[in-house]
Image (cartoon, rainbow, N blue to C red):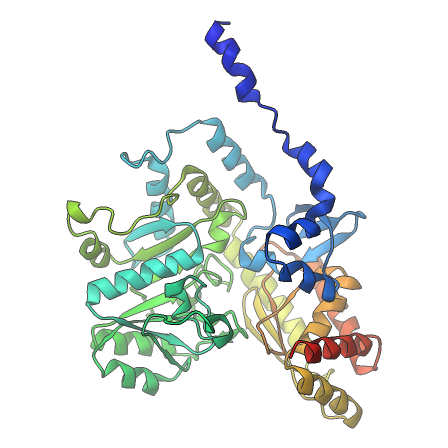
Length: 471
């Protein structure tokens, strides 16, 4: 061993031991968040009893510090499409690190971005090129910039109740005032009701619209665009020389039982498509803006404009490797077909409960993106309790269901949005019939308790007091 090698060895090994650090400081997790990060997160988790300590995870399950198994019906807001620690994705990341690639030199063309773009576009036959960023909101920002530039128009239309991200451009097309309040001025964009073609055409006639951005199925409330709307909107937009942007950040990559949600409607070919979340494999943040060839060529029209849109960590080797592994797994394990079958089973079994429970108003969605909506009951006793919750704050009943699902049945779910009586199910795409049985049994037990006036209503009173105190 040379002197130089001997001198470099200790620094390469280093003194940093991640496992030892977590063993020493892991118990401080909630205190650390409270002191250095968003202090409202630990406060919220403590209030609703979600302040658990999770120690390991695999597939659609994770385990707490007492060894209890939990079923994940949230998938990290859709990021964990293949579940946690899929062995193929995990191996790909080990491989890319072991290769010691000359990554992000900025002045070369590495093969992995091209290979991932090629494979992603194979599922997007009417699209031609890809820009890789780091998140869903970045993918949306790219689409907004591209649409404005190539049309020469300033305004983008979006749908009421939409969610496209929280950076300033994406926030400008966010259909929920709670996210927008206090961050003005935003971009001069305009909301239209989802499914309202007349409202869309009225705005298009003004001649300043660059695009309409739309989620084929909205994450907030799990509302699907009406049949025929996307194709009719596309035709209107193109007639007025505007573009259709499909936000598939949550719905894409198999979530709804097709590769993209817009593919459920024949003839829909968006000009720009945004994807992220599941493409990461749950490991490395990645976002992608897919578009038609003419759009990219107009944006990147000369060597002077080669970096007119860029991202410092975009196209990094780890993210590209994760994306390639994800698409390989989706094809090899026929994930889209699996989602269609298991999603139909879960939705059908839940929908069958609407006649049994008067508090259960609707079950809707596609694939493994399912909304469970609660509504005003018929019986006088339940109606008075419902009214008590609604008077304090809309959305409390849905929260009353989410909490016992976790605390009593160890199943993690989420309320679909602020002031909504809707639970959204977006589990890992790999859940099986046993997981469906577990969820339906647990949900049935919680609904039985709610209709019998059980302990769930005691928790409801706690939520009412909290809601009143926060006014």
